[in-house]
Length: 212
Picture 1 (cartoon, one colour):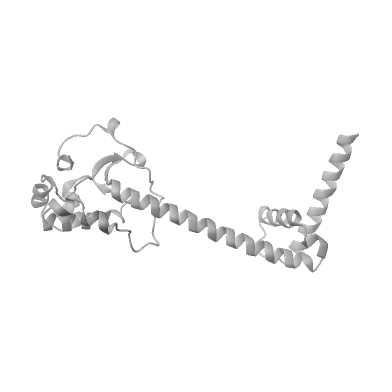
Picture 2 (picture 1 turned 135 degrees about the horizontal axis):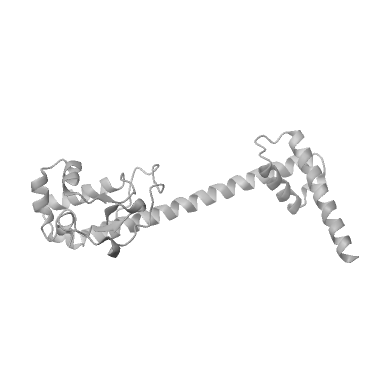
């Protein structure tokens, strides 16, 4: 049980690996998801003392600013310092069945460090990370669509039919990115169009050669 964390040696070979690393952050999030109904009906809330419940909630908040995010140091004195309470008193509370570290368990983190994790905190963070990646993907897709549309409009000023060719627009967009073009001025667009023409010529030559 958690009351023994930090008081007894832990066999690291048997510990689960924490799935989030040092680089996994939610720095832009100033809030955390809280499952209100789950909390209201949890054993921790129904059986823990008011003091233990308060410290338990504080530790969850503290974990969001730790590295890896969602974990806590396993040293009880360090945790007491973070909570700003007497270490001896904190140790006594942790021996209770529903103490401040209820369901916090040891895990192996990136670099081999042993820290504490909580299944509810990890689930909440995993969902938040997933939403973050989804939002990033949507943002990148929207930016790509706008970039292609701008390129299409610019190419149309040179060659209306070429601007209707989706494959050509996407190829030139990729070529400009690979070439490190940061500002797509007329010179760059003209170079991209010439490269596309060369690319199509080479393809045609390759097809002709294969037929022969």
